Picture 1: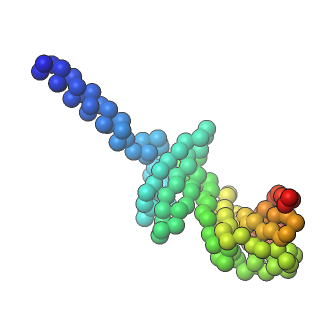
Picture 2: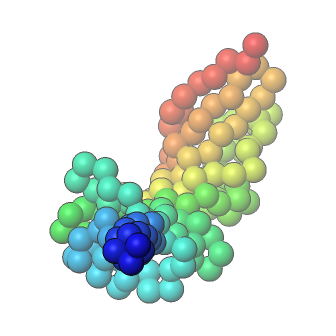
Picture 3: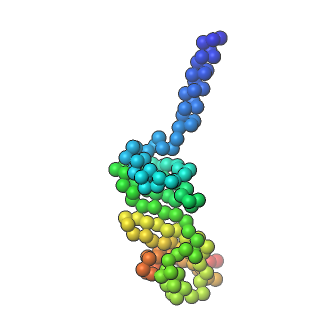
Length: 149
């Protein structure tokens, strides 16, 4: 009986060590150190590894942010959801001028990749919805058109 209790206790301890393993166990030391250097005040961090990249999802100042690192620990890109009112003025003006009569969605995506920031926003009117890719200088590209039924 004593032996059975010991084996069950050991199995339970082994299982609980796996159950409470942190997401950071999925991350190599270079990436972890780079992340801690870049985002020292991050909270609620979770990690995913996909092919050659590590993706962190975390909160910083109550805002959810995603960051991508390569295996060497270089920050490749970040993204976050923002309110459309937070879009740069150049983008807001360009959308209102070029797409008069369209309603802008409440949320937009800010994506920084290789040092360049782009904004993705959806606009719509009675006939269609457009997914736009916007540069900070006001250039706008239509990524996708969706006709309304």
